[in-house]
Length: 542
Image (cartoon, rainbow, N blue to C red; front, side, top):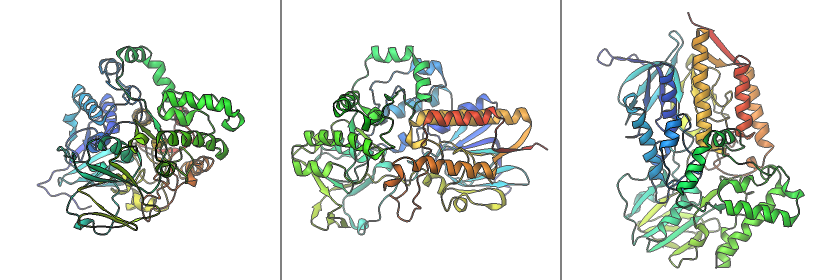
């Protein structure tokens, strides 16, 4: 990185944070508590991260709103009132804006600014950051809050897309101005969470909706609806215990399974348990038994239950058969949470197109041509997901000691310690990075745990008079192996999915999240601190 010109003075901060989503906002709050100067760089025009970019029809959180919220302020917890059990995108974005306003965060956030590069200078012990605005800034600490998904959308390179005369959109980069879909012939490609939600929302307004499905996904009901004030107040009254249960739960929500093995219970007892979980709705279903993601036989009992539900909802048995997943155990792809997805295919104006048996060959001026047919369309929506987990970080030019790039270090898969810090990159922290529970959890629970850990680490360094911190090679190697072993003790790695990176052509196939559970992971991180940051090397300040 060349030196800045005299006309472009270098701005100096104690810490630089990349991204003003929930992780970046939470980190800024903690940095201020420590008395550190901070600058947050955000490429959007406002806060919100995922919920700023993902504005597609039907977008909403798949974690209950009372849990998918900040816990760092008791006053904020009590004052904010969610209106639905599962909040829609617009309400979550309003919440993010409210938090930013309430804590006057915008004065330390620079919007419409991409971080182009961040290079570590060994001589000064500073990170030098270059932005799309042509600015240079330095900081002792560099913190990535780029998230795991939204900053790296994946658009398939279908031949002929440049010839399409209609409009096309990606769910992860939906326009901020209104999009009129009423009376249009619309094609949605993809049936993950964004595809499922879009399908439900668009079907009632489209003249005809074609859902192009390569891989059927499992979806469970949310039973979403207005959040009754009495229910909301009851949770607020016990928020402390509610949050604690989430922090030490398997996936960061206040839910505990019955502790039994699915395959060892009688079919009659299993049916009762599954019906109860189905009636409760949401992610709780996959937590009904603790071995559903560990044992294929147990998993199959849950899959068969959901299969019966699908066939009972969809009137056309041929369509129902296509909607039943057959290539992966339930839960090994992020399970969807819906409000009437399967019933949507009973509508006369909705057609399911199987592109596994008849792949998309080209996009024409007037629509989509598959191996079997041509579909005339006015609008194409790509609900094709993201270059997840590592993609947002790998898109940045981050270089540590000796000019080592993070891309090169992670060329054969991400290597770090605790999912937070990597050898050769002093004072660089990744919030919900690979090697942490991240996408296997309630992201707000995991974000707050990482932010708190980083803040406590910076306080410890100040108390010790330490200049920098980074993992030891032994600790990093041990952690990478532990993440691998835990992952491969589950059913996750056997599946082609964005969990394993196989949705991106040419990406290394690897399962990188920590699969040992949010509570166990938190205890491991706490133990590292209790033992004086074991596995980390601290250098003394000069």
